[in-house]
Length: 289
Image 1 (cartoon, one colour):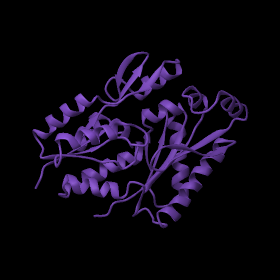
Image 2 (cartoon, one colour):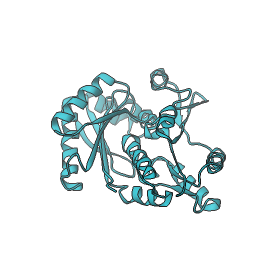
Image 3 (cartoon, one colour):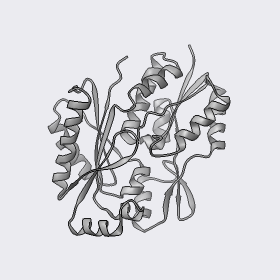
């Protein structure tokens, strides 16, 4: 039986030290902040990140260099027969395409890059599924095929607390941001595979949470065939307000009896564009082997 390594990055919400406990390798996501490189989960914590964001620092995301990726693969393949690499969705970053091209050059049959269009808590679930499949004896190729077979079987809705960071990143016009702020709108965004898209506008936080819960109910009923907690993972996420997140978790679990909702901080790559105070609900189809 082949010895299979699982590699992901911190966009999954799994930090390197947690990865060690899971028996996987987690690559820290690089960020440039005021011209200095930081690594998520190494020398950049959630608190540090949001503090710098509030101070008006120039923050931009990056990706591991091709050279460092190849060095890691070579080092891992000295101990393992093959590896599964689960990066951020190709719809949100070029890191997946880069890794796929690198793997095609000299690593055919050894490195299997998974493009299953996930981020944050749904990406985390893909990693946990990969670990389970590895432990059950599946090959790297089989793990990749299973994960990509359900790549669009996930859904995320995110309610923003502020429009400031969307305006700062050029994703909405200053006029639209000013009007939204004046009207105290709470935009609800969605991720269903490829990218972050507008979904709805709420006038209050409570209305926004209801929109997300109802949208998720609709997805579970119509996209996933009305499956229950035995067939669907339900998750939540947030940016920098744990108390508000735990309150939302309670509301979601009341709306979805029988589900145990996992809650994690949002990936800093997403938080960079939406700022603090965001809430999210997510689901993904369970893989039954």
